[in-house]
Image (cartoon, rainbow, N blue to C red; front, side, top):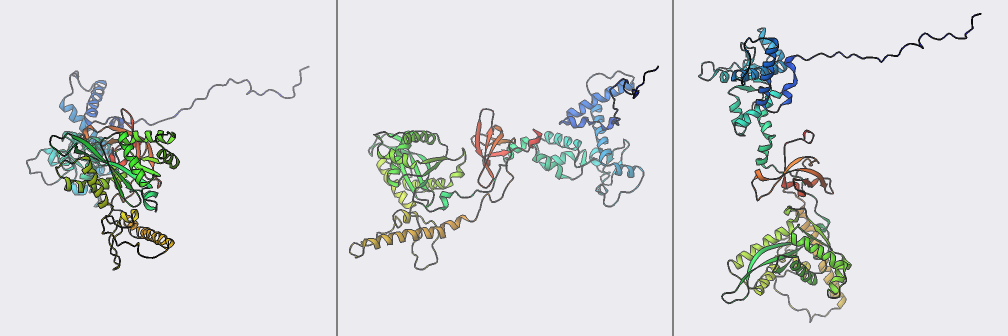
Length: 530
């Protein structure tokens, strides 16, 4: 008997498995639409490659009986150029070509209507115009029409810009009008020139950003010179003695300025070194008190002094005595501005300018000794600390403007001394309360009169797009012409408290440097294109 099966095997189980094949049908681009034009950034290179391609096509189609050999001729280059012009016109002016070829009129809203376009025997769209009777060449009387934005237009503008030796907009447009009429006139040419890297190097368009908020130390009442900025001025020429044949040597002025009340302290130093600055800093703190913060630029002497003072804070040597103890207890914090950013320390830069103003007018070409110069600097210090911090008020009883000297001694340093009050009877407590009341009145006037002048922003008052990492920039250097400025790439941004970038780190060929944005020139190259 035949065996009984509960279920017969399916005929599909033993079939051979074959991999499936997918077929995708794509439409091949015609020869006129190949993307060769997008592969080159030079018109000359594009035309020469096109000539070789057209030669190969004629050889394959056997269109030429003679062997095509030798260098590329002028006729071949002209034919390659007209070939790409025709492709571009067919892509951008398809409707216009269709209507003109059939004898139809263009609508009034068409931008080509005012050019009275026509088709030449080669099928190219040219400007009609009214210069048929002129003695200009045929290409100048009837230039080829090109769209405003196309790959060929950009290459032609770039070639004309180079042939005119990086000429301006008017020169480049005049050169182009001898053969081409670009829709938009000067606009596409000006747009290209603004993106030219070599022209932007000499244009020196530096980056800008809205000015930042004043630091906490500038707008908060505090003890004079608790928050201090420091800078150097000089060199000055001094002589050893007053007699004849005295030797000359250089000296410098260390300027300390209080960030709150703009009071100034001057120290004369005879060396531009770390040791000389530390000595001047000791004299300053001995008379004005220890600083909580000390700001300066990135001078080499300041950098060295910072490391020396850090070692000083960490040691309790016997010879330094109380000074080392006070410094270590208070812990003066030294803050450095970004390199090549003098506008970050505008307060002490203005102080240096004021000191030089008086020094040049008093000394002139004379040579002073150390004692004479030190005495003169002390007098200049008194004059600068007596300058008004704000304009005189309208109060008829207010006879004196508020000066830094009011916070230092209670009055202007150049005023006539008041009569002695020793004979006036009064308790010690009432005199102390009177002194405190005077000091509080000074700070009240400072808050009401001095701070108000910082409300208006007269420079850098617009928010600009922040620089991005990866952008190519030029680092300005006033010692060299723009052609020698180093090229760099932004590797890090340092935004402020308001989120705006005013300082960036740039990688150059030799090192990574930190610069403010006003000292760099961004190149017109997008981050995605590099």
